[in-house]
Image 1: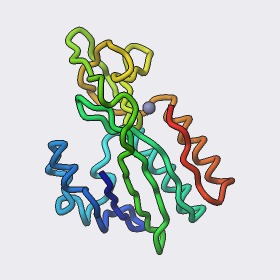
Image 2: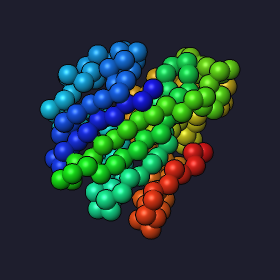
Image 3: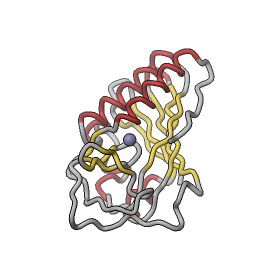
Length: 183
Ligand SMILES: [Zn+2]
C-alpha cells in the first residue's frame, strides 16, 4: 500500500496518487476517495483537534526547513495492526506531499486480533499509534489480550506527542531527516 496527497500553501488538497482509492474503499470510506476530497481543505478530512495540531506542527517544520520528515504511525483495521511510514516532503510554493507507505510485515500482524470489548469502553483512540485510552492508560489493543470498545473520539497519546516533538527537534538539526523508531 502506497499513496500520497499533495496540498498547496493553504492546505487545500490539490492532488492524490498511488493506491488511495483502493485503500479508501477497503476501509469502507467511500467519502475519502480522491474525487471527493480533491479541491477541499485537508482539515475537512482530519478528525480531532489534537490530530490537526499534530499534523500542523509537522507541516510547519517541513515548510520552515525545506527538507522531508519521516514518521511511523499505525492505521489498524479491526483485525489487523498496520504499520505505516509517513513522509512529508516540501513542494514548490510552500506546498507539501504527504506519502503513506505500509511497512510489511508489521509487528504482530498475523497472530493477534483486536478483541471485541463489551465490558469496557474507551473514550479516545490515539490517531497516530491506535492505542486506546482506558482509564489513565493508553493501551495497544494488539499487544494486550484485554478489550477495547470502539473509540468515541480521537486524540493523541503522550508517547506520540513526545515522538513528534523529538522528530521535529531532530529534523531541525539534521539535514537529511531520519526515520525515528516506533515503540
Ligand atoms: Zn499514540
